[in-house]
Amino acid sequence: MELRADQALIAEWIRPGSRILDLGCGDGRLLAALQREHGASGYGVEIDQDNIVKCIANGINVVQSNLDDGLTDFDDNSFDYVVMTQTIQAVRFPQRLLHEMLRIGREGIVTFPNMGHWKCRIQLAFGKMPITRHLPNAWHNTPNIHICTISDFEDLCVSENIEVLQRTAVDSEHRAGLAMRVLPNLLGEIAMYRFRRSP
Image (cartoon, rainbow, N blue to C red; front, side, top):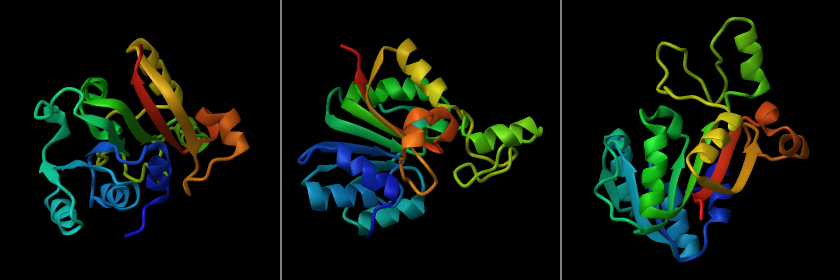
């Protein structure tokens, strides 16, 4: 099963042989690829029953859980990386979840749609909630309850003593370019961060 482009970028950030916890792991394809190609091990956490069946079919150890209930089932420092792709904006307590990620893992990796992208800004300027490829739902049926910009996320990291180790902003095809490196909050559609607790 082929990785999505954002998952392939995440795989580049993960050291071979690492222990991974993938929150909101979907069908388990990221963990399956990391096990196959990087000798990684770990677990997925997923709430959707159909995705859990797919994880099991892909040979992934998966736990059914709602991330809003916390991660109390996992011990401190039990993983090298805790990964959460395209999920942080849909949880009730993102700040608490970031701290939980860093309690149980040495490093965290998150991706999220950037509400500061110019397409979102234009739609807001015309009085409409943004609908884009990565924010495809109307305001009344969106699962996203804590959407943010790249600047918002970085401010949160500073206030919560979270050290950003790597970051990139990519377009809807998960390509990074010079313009996005210069003006990530304006031109990046998806933000990707690797972080840890500040020393």
